[in-house]
Image (cartoon, rainbow, N blue to C red):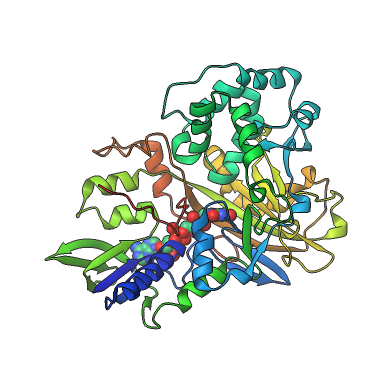
Length: 463
Ligand SMILES: Cc1cc2nc3c(=O)[nH]c(=O)nc-3n(C[C@H](O)[C@H](O)[C@H](O)COP(=O)(O)OP(=O)(O)OC[C@H]3O[C@@H](n4cnc5c(N)ncnc54)[C@H](O)[C@@H]3O)c2cc1C
């Protein structure tokens, strides 16, 4: 059987690897060809050593809570390469009013679960705290496709949305919470409301039952976020090493996937073609949409309408002594109401060991996103070293500006995403504008973004 995989990011590589595993289990002879349009595999995942700093161009970790990536590492025999976060510093700050406020202990993404730290926090006004407490008595809502923003303001009020939910969600999806589908992004909170009515009570009860890992309690094998000692590209190298040596074809851009008899024909950008019995398309949604426009126009429209926004990551190396802030956390997020170009900043060398030489610190800054796309542009990204300054207390000039990268992504599951309409929805001009915007190269390395929510796992569905 001939299988073609289009896209050499982690999704394409994991799919190819899984197909080989299944073929071996079932005694099927599989001829595999993976077509990657770029000159390297890994897609968004790219790690580099730069003057002793370990710089991640895309993801710096994955969630251990969702078991599939860990299971893949186990099957690849690379579990011993995984490292956990340094949970002594498992704290997130929120930049508000020119200061970094720690997110109160026990705050679970959208809502507080511990009274003391929440009451003492200076991040919220007393009126805001009282409004959040109203969640304890409010009735359930009814709209199953409510936006994340709508849900948080209804249950917890405007301050909870503006000061916590919006910046935390922007850090994950770089998205506007008012158009983000709660059911598609954080179904757990919808479920808590459905079962327990009050979000605060439901999360508090769940936190008492939760496994130690989810709470960052030391002694649990994995922390919530895990990565590899030498960065995320270790996963890519391990996957690639398990594929047949002639399976990967670089600089082979697929332009169309069409039916040919019982099989498929893949048209290439250089005019050549390849035949396959089965095809897995693992590219960005807008690329897949283009490839399938003649084969399945309705699906092509749906894929093309998944919105993407430009963002940039800039990684900065500093002499530790030049940063007065204790850096006793994993980083900070910045609410949009602060009016700054920054979405978030990760204290990379605090979060994981081995990211900076002794006596140095590595900070990664995120700019742009759906609510401030222009900030993700090259001009703003070049000025990035100045941005953590006022919030991390004027650390001076960075020693090394490892990367300035413009990404097109991640994709954002908007409302209606889960209940994929049978017919394609009418084109939305704004989404089209965003999804057609090409990614730009700044210096020294260009990156492409695009977040499939769980690219190494596909749920089996029965029709
Ligand atoms: C800045 C940033 C930070 C992130 N941080 C995290 C994180 O901490 N944790 C996490 O879990 N996720 C994170 N993500 C998301 C994560 O990176 C993605 O979910 C994941 O890497 C996507 O993998 P993929 O294989 O689906 O797509 P991609 O990595 O985008 O790969 C798609 C591949 O397809 C190729 N391709 C495209 N079109 C064609 C074509 N026509 N023909 C042939 N090949 C083609 C591309 O060149 C590319 O190599 C982050 C994303 C970004 C941008």
